[in-house]
Image (cartoon, rainbow, N blue to C red):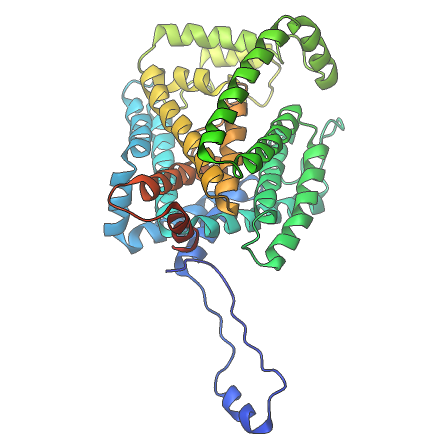
Length: 439
């Protein structure tokens, strides 16, 4: 089934008088896919959680659970196939057993589990291109809303739009830039989609600059360079592609060795440009505290989202030291370190294995079968791979970013199986077209 939200408006042209009565017997119709409509409502709710709050999360749950209960047999089969990501969510839920804040860990763990279940179901109900179109529409709406709201920080250090921080706006703007690029370069899409994507690309770039987030700017520029690399690799034979990648790895390693000898000078230039301090806004101090927590509870951690809690002594001290008056929106600024504190080395290792596997699958997908969907997921996952060393990028409950990661994991799994399974003896070109079109 072509699972795609679309309108099919038929209008009568200059027909003969005899044929007009026949045309009147077929009124204009509106056709749609219930799966795409439900997914759009769910993702719209996630995208607009910043201004809507709990109402956005409720919208996501209502629409998402409607998809879950509609075809229970198919959905259970999909969840069994994606058992590893389901296990991650269950591990977070089970951590309530050793958490000092049992009710909070259980609550957030259940919310993450619902996010995972709905994300898996959406990935198995929609064609990748349909999902990308929905992300494009919802991201465009958040971008327009942010521009029209005209809200900035009181100190003038960044634009906010509909978000609570400039970093949140920058992340959303980066997402809009990435999805717009993916749609613009796909010639199989109608001109109306590609022309609209050019406009939203400009909008996303403008908001990205207005957000004044150095991390978002650098990571977005990097994925644009990666897109250029993907574009070049697509036109090579498999053998030449392998040689090119090997040479690129050697060149990259050589550059690291050379630049390491100039680390002090480069660090000074970077800090002067971004306005950061020598510890990257205290990250090294935070990491020292985190390593102490990991050493105390290495395997299981303190419990899912059970560290940054009001009343937790060490968290309260860190909030005071860093001047976080709101006592919220703060973390260890490293995905692996932060998650190891909460769910231990066991849970973090499983998360990392799944995430890195999805990055590799999506990148290979984009090189072998370029399309708006494959390019979007590849660029999105590579950007997160860059940011995971200085920010916390996965897995959060009721988060659009986590939802996209979950679907990327599922699509990467589906594409890999379709292209390489010995049971499916079809050409790669045929397989990629089926995944591109099928729901």
